[in-house]
Image 1 (spheres, each protein chain N blue to C red):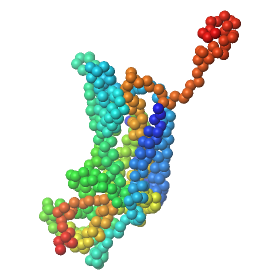
Image 2: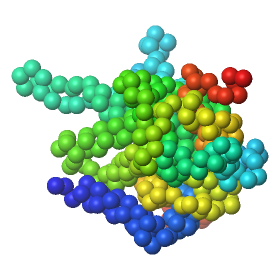
Image 3: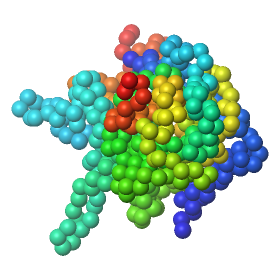
Image 4: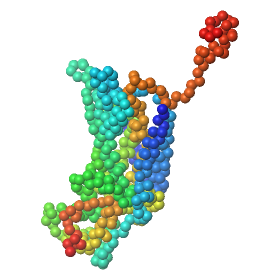
Length: 333
Length: 132
């Protein structure tokens, strides 16, 4: 066993047990249902803003776009507009493709031996496939949760639910995104557990969020399909949070729900301090958001402060008399 | 050139999106949205006192029971359901459930709408008001 993922798994299990015992045994419904979610949101907002504002201060001394194609050059050389963007518009399109389609993961390759002892690079699609499955299903799941946080339920949430549950399997209606989220997260985890090269470069900070998200997905699916909780009470609690009139609904909700909520609170509060900050970072990565036009335009680090210079003319001005005395030639008499 | 303004604009937009539930409910929401609407019982339902199972069980499992009923009736042809308390029922949504709970709008729909649940029961089944 590898300690990095063993410890992460144990951490998530312990967190789950804390929430379960806290509510079922110690009766801390208010702590886990109201106080911790609000705290998590505050930590998230402040932490996120702090991180991004810190990034705004970092210097960008050079243009460092990573390019995957021919840069703009002479007219008769074909320019690859989105892999080596020249204008802001092209950069925007490149960014959109990156953010919406995770294009850089699509370019994943693996090195190995081809025929004989020849090095060969093989295109490997799995990382992109698992990642896009994971990200989009997570996005849909988050959006669907607005049914608990908004009354009346916005039209796009009902619309998503309709598409998500279009196969009408099981009762309550199976939402595909929930299963795909769990599947995607598990596949991403398996990559990091089974491929030796990935295990070697993985840290607890890589495993912990994955286990946490798997925990969220598992508890969420359990609450809907196996050990059902009363959704009406869940919505009462969520609406209380969203309208700033928090309270624990009459009759209480089962411990499983609080485990789910605690996991989500931990994840939300953890985002600003973790790799999940890539949600903000992707917009600010200079290897993606800068145009490759250094041959045409001079790049000045926008964070440059005015440097105090002392030119030769000024130097000569200061010491002209002494230079003349010593017989050093001067430019201006 | 300094990107600080652009970045802060993006940050503000992101926070507005994240805080959607707070301002959405403030602008469009009803005042008492954090208390669920109570499903209304008809006289007949109140007289019967118990449903096919305990209320707490029915709150979370009624869809499961209906699902089982559909399978046993349609696939196995079994038209008698023995409840936990020994009583026998005709496993039928229209004839058993909606015999007591004939007020779909004030019973079924209240919670379903609140939790944004859109069951497809009534794609096929009719409910009392409609048949009249």
